[in-house]
Image (cartoon, rainbow, N blue to C red; front, side):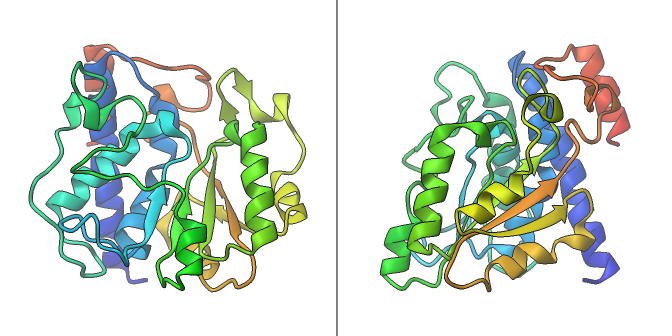
Amino acid sequence: MIKQHVAELQSIAKQMRREIVEMITHAKSGHPGGSLSAVEILVTLFFDVMRHDPANPKWPDRDRFILSKGHAAPVLYSVMAECDTRPRISSTRCGNSALSIRAIRMCGSYRRSKHPRVARRRPFDWNWNVAGRKARSTAFASTCPGRGEVQEGQIWESAMFGGDKGVDNLVAILDYNHIQLDGFVNDIMRRSCADKWRAFNWHALRWTATAFQRYSCVCRAATTKGRPTIVVAHTIKGKGVSSWRTSQVSWHRATEEEMEKALLELA
């Protein structure tokens, strides 16, 4: 990866963080911490790994992305807007119609609700992997769960199924930002997360997802055969805005003054 390439990814990430801050402030509620921590993950996927074309969102051979931690919808809306207004680094053509980032959580905003929902013009993908694998599709699917979310039973039902069926066109990138809804992860559930996934026949990798230079494990996941991959991505909750970082467990809104300070920090 050349320095210019990294610099371009960093520029996109900074712009996305600004959009997330504005989006949540204007909505007067949201989940800034978990949205900001996942920025590097989504920028890496959408601008450097996944095959997709925003101008043709139903392209059958596109790679899929599913935001499992739906409360971080702002980061998904932001990366979609950036894909619409920038050429992709890996050369697939993009459209020109940017998404309105200020419509989140507003009345009638079906396409930009507080959690991602299926819409006619902007389809979000669900439950695709097994069908795609049986059809021998070359497309790949990624999902992004949160650290608190993977304590839920439905996650382990899916993990058991994926490992048992050898769904090797799937990679789960765990946004491990060390904080969940009501406290710090180490105070709530300390057992090694990677060991659990290995026990369900998943290939487990570790990624320090705070810099783009170490993204190669996401690409390596696509070469793993016979089992799905879990990438434990160590991130920083609220990254980019010092007042929203790890000391704030449940930060869900910001005033206009706080937004302006955050935007200056992200300038």
